[in-house]
Length: 248
Image (tube, rainbow, N blue to C red):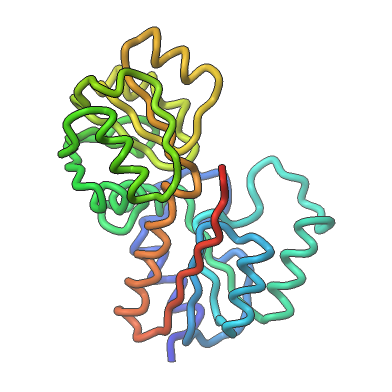
């Protein structure tokens, strides 16, 4: 049976963890049972996801958004106490991978979103090369928005002319709306990310680059799911993906 240490080593190497300067620890965040036979994956290590994984008697919980973010209050009180208590009671390991999972060329959030929409990556931009530039089969920005809505099951906010051509497409899942300027400077005519901030709309309107906000959670469902499926195939594990929707 797969050990916790072997799983941690495999994930560390697969996702090139040492290549990233991140905002939280990547890898094993909370130690649980020593042997791994069943893994549950999900986007965020929320209390509800921990409880649902415990109901399935998961040995490990694999997420994109884990705990212990830089600058947070380190005391185990309130929300953190509730989450940690539930995890420890279940004797469940918590594995979290943030930027390494965004960036992986096959299993990452950017790659998985692109694969489902037929986007072709050509180059990268931004910090640690996390932003992607490429082409989309969708001809207009309106068609691109509809394709995203069909895949993600939620309304997409488009800032720009829906009838205009997509042109060169830039994308970075999650909360990368602040990279719109870097995307435009790298040559993007249209940029897709998860969230939108007040300055994002102004930049899009004033600089002529369209912006599509498709949801932080929604745009990052696919990387951790693909990673869990990889582990199931690699090690013969039982894998369950649990999607707990988030309106953000």
